[in-house]
Each structure stands twice: as C-alpha cells, then as structure tokens.
Image (tube, rainbow, N blue to C red; front, top):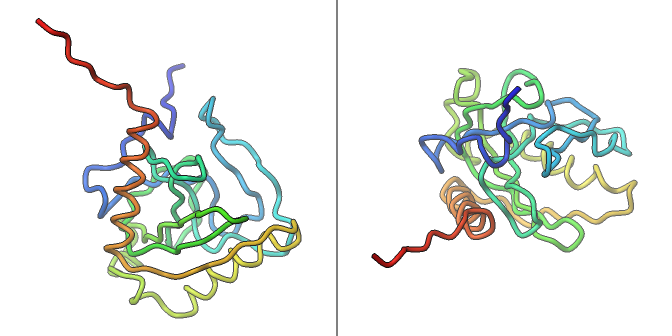
Length: 186
C-alpha cells in the first residue's frame, strides 16, 4: 500500500496563502491530543488532556510548512461539524493567534472551512463572534495548566498577518527539507 506522508507530500493548496489545505489531527470537541508522527506520517496519541476542556475547533497543520518549534504550522479550522482525523479541509485563512508556549513562539493560524456555508462568509478575525475568540483563547490558556506548563496568548492578528506567517513557514520548510539544487557545469 502506497501512502503519502501528510506533512511532506500533501499539497499546501492551489490558493496558498489565502486558502490552504489543512490536515486535521484533532476533531472539534476532542479531549485526545493527537499529532502526526514526523517519521512515519501516522497519527499518534500524544496525550489525553489533563483538564476538563475540549478542542474548540478542528485542529491540525498546514503541510509543507515548518516553524521555530520544529513542527509544521498549526491551524484551527472553524467548521459546523467535527472532522475525522487525517482529513484534509480546504480552509480560508482569516487571521492568526500569536502564542508563546513554554517560552517558545507557537502561532496558530485561524481559518474557516471553505466548503461550509455556515462559516465561509467570514473573511477576517474581526468578523468572528467575540465569544468564539474568547473560547479559543481560554482553551489555549487553560489546557496546559494542570501539566504545569505556561501558555501566553500575546495577540490576535488579522488575515494579512496570517498570510505572512504562512509564507514565512513555507520558506523555513524549504530551507530545512527541500534538497538544494546545484547546477552542473556543461
């Protein structure tokens, strides 16, 4: 059976950075934290959340991206349904949550499911209900408290900053994972 590695072989999407392919690791409402095994490409259970919270949106990553935390770029996809792990969602980027996790930058792209009529009219974080932003922020502030880890949400930035974060993470991916092309003298 031939399968693609979801991080390295799935396309970022034809409309990057505006609409991206998001590989979902964790469905909305889950207490289980799954993450991609970097070597095999399989999904592994990282842990069951220590506190009584659940993921407020479908959570995953953008393929062929890389960040300073040595992981692909994280993405939360707001959608009216919970999506199965390892599904690909066409996600319209609406902004980014700038977060520090144990002293390390850990940005989260915020997006809406492009094929979900209940949310795809949203074009920027400023159009989200204020409660949705509070719910996402509270989840990330609270979910590691019982693990004794410190998470700080520094700021929310709009769609253009989200696009820049994606582009930067694609460059960092290319630097770290794409083979260097050398010209052969002829």
